[in-house]
Image 1 (tube, helix red, strand yellow):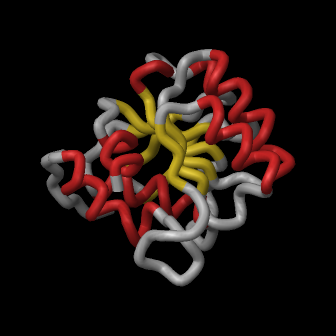
Image 2 (cartoon, one colour):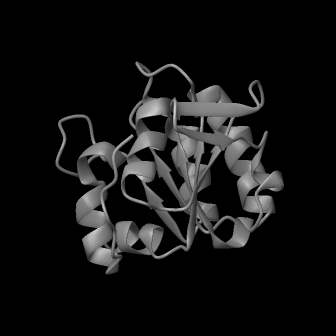
Length: 155
């Protein structure tokens, strides 16, 4: 739980693989950050905006190097392993301190790289869900572990 607490101690968050498709985890995870009133930036090189609802939208950035303050941003990843590794390499190069690799986003090479280049990595076995660590399942416990105050808001 130390890594989860470190992840949520960042003042900013980003979701790589954010999507406008409400059925995809990239949408659901971005919505989770929004619903918990956390400052979040979606990363998606193919769309300029993610629309969570008619009243809530977020401008996207194409990559970690375009984040406003990458060294103060923890990154949730919702991309396939082939995309995740170069994404993590760029995130490391700009100082992102912590990453949360959602189930299905990593293979052994991605895990090895992440564990040797970031202060905190949440991935693999563990958490409360059957598929491993997931922000949607374990995020609120992580917020509490980090002492983060949050207020729930609706979409």
